[in-house]
Image 1: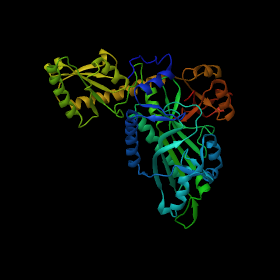
Image 2: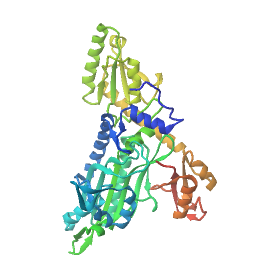
Image 3: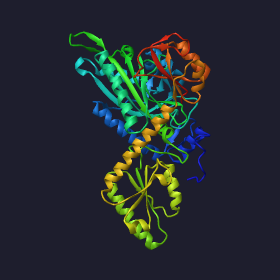
Image 4: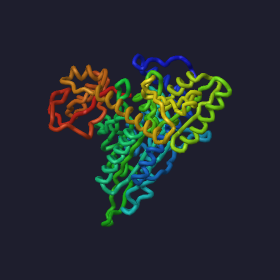
Length: 478
């Protein structure tokens, strides 16, 4: 591990981010431009994200399946808006087994088309509905400007795809899954997202409506952290997904899709990290508690290690715990190393702690002496459980406060142009694509979402001054 200091987060946020990802051993650059290798520590974080989401999916009646990586080119061409939206990002296979293929195959950028084809085979009657399937997998989008976790050619994600008998059921599903993502972000990742609807310009290619959870990063840029799409009957008509209703009439299904990817790891890093590195939310952290033994002599070592081993055994029944027994590095090096990796709690055990029968505990979210406390051995599991909960709530409170302090309600267009350079603008918007395009051209800010919770009444569009019935967030984004 490098002993050099990280770049200051406030001075070079982009380089700080890159160095944290590399030095904390979350990921590394692959030999193919724009691809990444997710290292074990990063993959453990992703596994915890998967488990937290998968549990929620199954509680809402969804089941997992797997669909092919390759999609016939003709499938994408069936839904005009969909192929137009994705055509610049497609990776296409034209040769297989040394021979030119009769039909080119697309490496999936998303799976609406192949899943739509399969649903058309499986769904025959209203009794077959709803179909509630999720897939965990990888997709490929040929991005030109890439960054580890945030935007890579290949990334990992889940994509849910559901089919329903009615428009109302499909809309209900779309919003249900948006709420699942919101709940996950708040209660697992301590990331205070804003749920809302995308504009027509920003929606998913082929969707009737797209919904999103938008998060503010530590440099005030927005990150689209998860999306849920109401697809209407667009894909059902393109792939002939029909069913016989109760009156024996043939009807097209109503479908949805929704996804959250490894990009969310980037959201966690950029929402919570500091100049020392990662600060991981306790409920997702691969290691929740690290035990650092401190000793100088062999006799001290045997005393301290006996306590550390017993403590590990006791706490491991409830928490993810690691003993750092490396002998080739100093305790100070270990402290810095685990701070870089964002472990929520560090237990320091030295001869004096053993003698007194206490534990010195340091919180990652509160630097220095202020974050240290001394615990007595009674009911340790409850004490550590409470500490980890406190850290989660503290992280969420701090991130929410930062977000709210950087959301502005500009009085006019000139002020909007100014505030989006260092925050978000929450402004009345008439809904026109022309006003949206003007903001983007003048400021590089885009409409992030039309929040589900809207203020009462109406106002004047911040751009053109026309009557407006909804407020929208404008922000520069990743």
